[in-house]
Image (cartoon, helix red, strand yellow):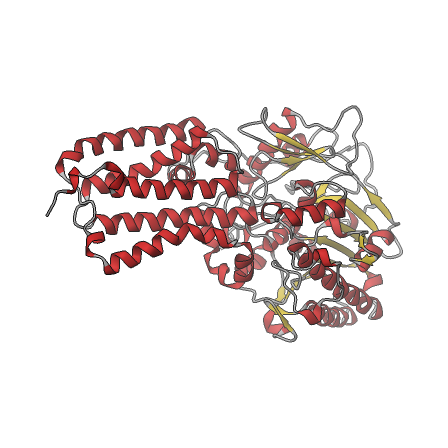
Amino acid sequence: MQREASKPFYTTPFFVFTILMIFKIYLSWFVIFGASVEALPLVTAIFSIWVLFCLIERFSDKRKMVCYMIVNIVLTSIYFAAIMYYKYYGVIVTYRALQQANQVTQVKGSVFHLMHPYFLLIYVDIVVMLLLQAFSRKFRTWGRAKARYRTWISLGFIVSLVFSFGAVWFNRDIVNEVKQAQHMGILNYEVYTIASDLFKGSDKPVQVTPEMVKALKGENALDPTQPAQFKGLAKGRNVIVIQLEAFQDILIGKSIDGIELTPNMNKLAKENVYFKNFFQQAGQGNTSDAEYLLNTSLFVPPNGAAAQTYVDKALPSLPKLFKTEGYDAVTFHTNDVEFWNRKELYAALGFDRHYDKTFFKDEDFLFFGASDPVLYRKTAEEMGRLQKEGTKFYANVISMSSHHPFDLPEERRLIKLPDKYQGTFVNDYITAENYADHALGQFIEELKANGVWDNSLIVIYGDHMGMPVYSLTDHEKDLLKEYLGREYNYQDMLNIPLIISVPGKLEARTYSHVGGQIDLLPTIANLMDLSLKNQVVFGQDILNNRNDLLPERYYLPSGSFITNKAIFVPGKGYEDGETYPLPEGEEPQGGPNETTKDEYDRALQLIKLCDDYVKTLPERY
């Protein structure tokens, strides 16, 4: 047989597979980091691939093509996963996301929606080569290693390893995970996250006190010389917290060609207390993370969903506070309680019982369970029963019919938007939220009819964004620009509504200062006169405090935060970060729409302090 060593280098597997991987690097780079390509990070990405290819060339002979195929499939799948994950979350996927693997089958519609056909081009070469591997002996024996190349291969391995290690070492202090992956190279970043978890230090957590949190929140966050307004205004009432699936604030008060999009939420916003600059802080767990934030006033974990990461802890929570007042703490959700490990989450939070699929059955099934109209009808009936029995309750109601990808059956679409919206994700989103709003209106009428509404404190808010800016087409962005009168960006994506109603007690008012989901617990506690003495909370009562510092985690990179002025997203650090002014923010005294290095440092410290605090909590079992 003719020795392949005499053939030109460009005919070798090493060269051919390198060219293929460069194509895949470019594809993932274009989707994640934008159209412009920087030379150094791209070169770094190639060197990380050569580390593996050199190992194949050095140690494999008869099984060389099998090894190349396996490595190709693994690397391709990493790049593909990075693309898909970024399209929804806006972050770089890591091995930690494997915790979500058992949830994927239930949200496969969302996955397919995010998948553009050209993404699948990343697998074309693999399909062709699998066929060649099966039917071509020449392909199977292609490029078997010869001794004369091994010195060069060993040298190439060392050089590639040094470059890859250098890329990790010199970029390890970048706070923004997306920038970190961009400058390390995606593969190096994946290895770095594994190594950092394996070799992370075991520093003793700081013992956290409420005073430490207040100091970091800012000297104007709380004024102890002034009595809290609205304290105990709803004392003795039932408490109903309605969490709306994927509901963004950009829908409130809006019409398209005379079509009012969310008439019931619009009416609620006009007749009650409405916060128009309220922001989501949920992370990987999405809806379940929002439940965690509401009930603990603690930030979501750095990795994974709170329902999977923190449920072994004895969590201080709203349900436990209410139980000291003799309340039943209950939660209503039409999906299986095992989804997102909610059964363990609810136990850790101290709920007395949950109403899930076993209660709602599959009546009027939509997406994952019974529809919102069924959720609300049966929930209203149960609340009416509890009230008649003299049971005071704290209830979380989790809606679900307006779930990504928002592809409602035609018979449930209650409005028809203009032709230019048809066939777009924006149309599907607005139509689904209109359906959810209609169901919410029915719920309110049922609660008013059975006497529960007037005897309750009602809190309504969105759990997380519905339209990721990362996955919208240019046409959809143009539609939103026309709809909003400005570019759709982080300020709109993360902005969710908050409405608070104490019928007969709390006057209607619209607030423009900033708040976040972490603020719900202390705000409710003040209205219900629940004591938070000695309890560590990372939020604040936003009915009394106008200045807030809201660190973001996951949907924005680490180091991001929100103030009354703007949203800040770091680059490599603070100095090259970007500021996104709030379109309708409340301008504090003495400053333009900008953020400060001090706020950046304090936001990072708050997150770290919360992580330390949760570590020090006792085990639940």
